[in-house]
Amino acid sequence: MFTGLIQEVGQVVSLQKQGPELRFEVDLKTLATKNLEIGESISINGACHTLEKLNNTIGTFFSSEETLAKTNIGFLKTGDYVNLELSLTPTTRMGGHFVSGHIDGFAKLLSVQAVKEAFVITLEISSEFTKYVVNKGSVALNGISLTVSDFKKDTNVFSVAVIPHTWEKTNLQYLRAGQLLNLEVDVLAKYVESITLSSK
Image (cartoon, rainbow, N blue to C red; front, side, top):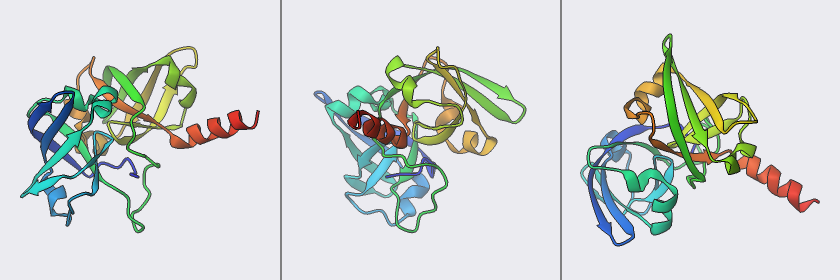
């Protein structure tokens, strides 16, 4: 479980396709100084991964066929920047929202508009996810906890407002229109849906 508050922007060092699977290395930078243990969970662009090896600041990770099919990890190239977050501990401050690290699908980046010091990012999602999106509700994009600022129910398009700190401390600043971001809808919305359906 994660909070959606990005702790570091790492950089992909190497990628090795192994059939339908992938093993890759990421420079964890300052995150490598956090007494990391082999086997612990780290969110990479919002997708939960297990740390296999650690050599100085370089962490090794493995992505299964299913992970590559449902996330943008399979689109990564050497040199790309990725959002990183360590899993929650009992003493972690809950500053974002509950993020499971299990990606639901993709959000296509349509545009980025600077509004004074902030940025408004507009995205398009599949119609299967629109029922989980509400104005002022939470979504995770590439692992970042964000608030929906504008969503019209009759469309698949919504916007989020990004403050300067989030822009500077995540990989949003490196993305371009047309790219796919990992989308995780609010898990609380899924629970409400499940309870509602089971009570019928």
